[in-house]
Image (cartoon, rainbow, N blue to C red; front, side):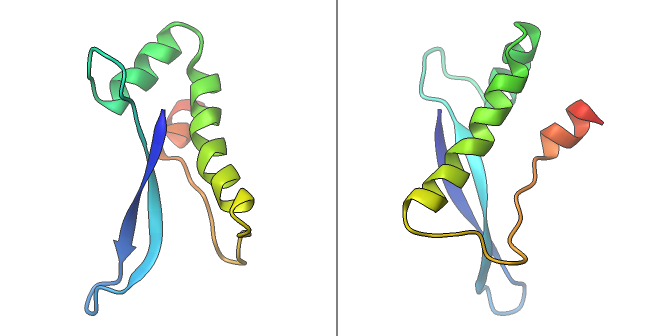
Length: 84
């Protein structure tokens, strides 16, 4: 699993105001990330894959000398739906 960063831009001036972290999988057969997460859940590995998808961008941010700024947040749309 790799993480790609998609900018979130402010309407009006297109200035980046954040980034969305997206999980991508290069293994064959190629399929969408939601299929990977669904199949992981069906195999009892859903939580482990979800946590790995969260840890990767957080770890990358912290190991690059960065830190989490006040007001910066991480959210997981699928996590909210799966664990609510």
